[in-house]
Image (cartoon, rainbow, N blue to C red; front, side):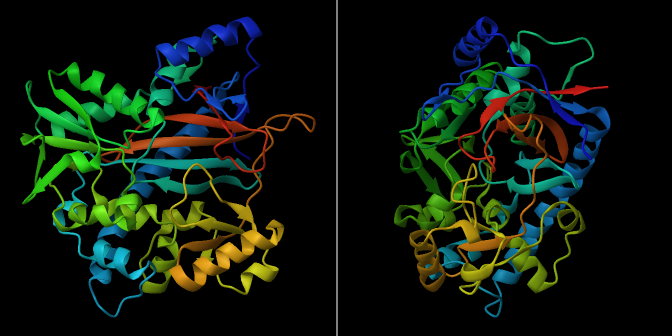
Length: 398
């Protein structure tokens, strides 16, 4: 059983100070979700051997994921290979040029859950992994650290250092921070990147995808060339949007993360790998068995239904608990959108709390260039770790 626990709850006064520090120093601007705080008043504690297991697993998963993306793309370019997206989206994805599979400055976050059977993996955030503000500041701001608690890293700073080296950025370079500019919770991570890049003398500009001009592999903003771009705008939004076509037709070389990440961000990829004979031994060890969701499953399955491009646990549900309206919506997706849902065996997360106050956890582990650079935690009293979960620091204890 995983060595995983939660700390004692912070006192009300200590939590108020910590929460304000997280907002103003850690740039945690989406500090409220619905009518509850999005910041946890507990820390997540991992035994050293468990953190070492996750580090080892993520190193292998990272390498397998890159191989999967390239291999699925090779097979997708063959007209005879299976198509599991709507035609327009599939055409864009399979036409990606080689820069879309450049492994430089490639960032991924693997989400693990402690269960009675050991650690289980729910997904990889390989397209636009978030949470770097929390992962890089919450452990530093935590008001009551204990002797022997060790941090897992500073992933934001490590990532930006990797970007500087991978793209050869010198002082005076210009970098575009591509994000959905209407959302403050997107800008909070870009603002952190902007500050970290400034430490290297790099000028970083926040910009929407529509503010970028793509010219023969190059990137321009306001008519001026950019030396690189960091993308926090979801690739599947570009995949399905009519205005997203140029990003696939003229994929820029110095883009992190590249759009080839959509092959693994799509939760259908384990089904495709199994059907096409692509071996993924580490994924098979940690990921619950995953299948194509069929119409017949909606009437009898006890597994989970998961949308292929969902985030933060959105729309994940036990199939036998779905109401009629939800089942009808999924059925229409299956009939009209092919492959937009998968069926996955359910696991029961360890209750780190009590019967009266259950606590379930997720540990997001970041990796760039094959090296683990840190992690952060999410805690919830609900059955699934979704958008209602609260963010917490992760400490390693002996």
